Image (cartoon, rainbow, N blue to C red; front, side, top):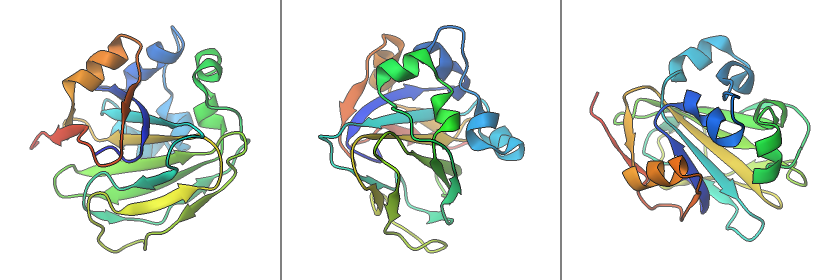
Length: 189
């Protein structure tokens, strides 16, 4: 399910994401995750980019049932993540303060959940207990203020994202959806 209320983009292959934001740029997993070994797990996998505006409900949730690890902070500045800023500089994702959570599920394999700070959003508050099971849709935490971004990464071949979501993204459109609505299905591989 969608992890938050917001405007969403979907990519069947995360390495195609750069072309949406800046022609010729690619979404650099190595820089974003700051871990080459971890980035290998998600290379070629699907991705959901979720933009939360100041008017949105600013809590974020687990997209499936599973067992989350502790969120790991990668410190950085807090640049704006609005669409205009991202179209000029996709590297904002790899520079901004972000938190990464390894999330183990039975149906979807491992999912990487990333909360990205932005201007005026310097902190997240986590409301879940790491290393214990959580239900699909269970609250993970919330941003303290303003708008921000979530990126959900899936291993290759584990999820089929909704066709309308992929089609809208291909046309350059964000899809507005609320937390808990379906964004894809497990592929069974």
